Length: 259
Ligand code: ARG
Image (cartoon, rainbow, N blue to C red):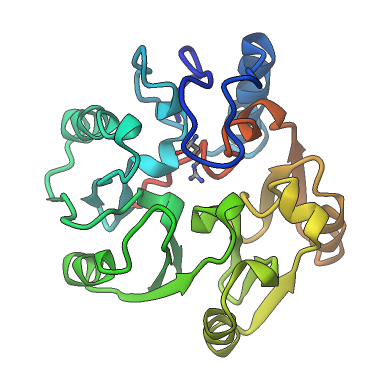
């Protein structure tokens, strides 16, 4: 994770962002701390921190900082020019922490924001912020099956805003956010596909972190919260209003380090 010390809206690179709709820095800090506290204290998850950098307000969204599988690191090749300087800072963190195997994709690829790992498969999202062509680079680098999913709505521009990996047999989606073909692919591959309501999708409830038993998500996604509870999961609702002004939520604020 990355503390929101320099988080604000300095440019507009997705439909949620407006320089006229500024974040409340104190509230953003409180919300971020609540997420950090939920991970570390309530769930006992280990969290490392990358140092925030002035004038890189979106560095707080570490999901875009890489995709890490088996200790191998695919760095982001940001489509958004404003975010391109982040890559070097993320790379430095990985180097300082002993990671050695890097891929710098030739095609646009915005890290875990557009690449969600489900068992031995990586689901990738396009076309808004990552190129479909980056799929082959990821396939060759990680040696995993990579399945591209086409997103339909600019407000849900990263895959992690439209799809949650819930457990080894389950994902959650808001169906209209995918083309018919991509939705069909998901149903063919994944045994259980939970459907979120439009309201929950717009509350960024799909931008969630799950370990299969525990799930952390936006406190306004009341329908999903009820569905997860009914499945017997432990649910941790958190406020994310300030980050949603930038088009981000729980998952965007979190990068998973897989060994
Ligand atoms: N303002 C950021 C951007 O548009 C938000 C990133 C959200 N990250 C994510 N993984 N969906 O790039």
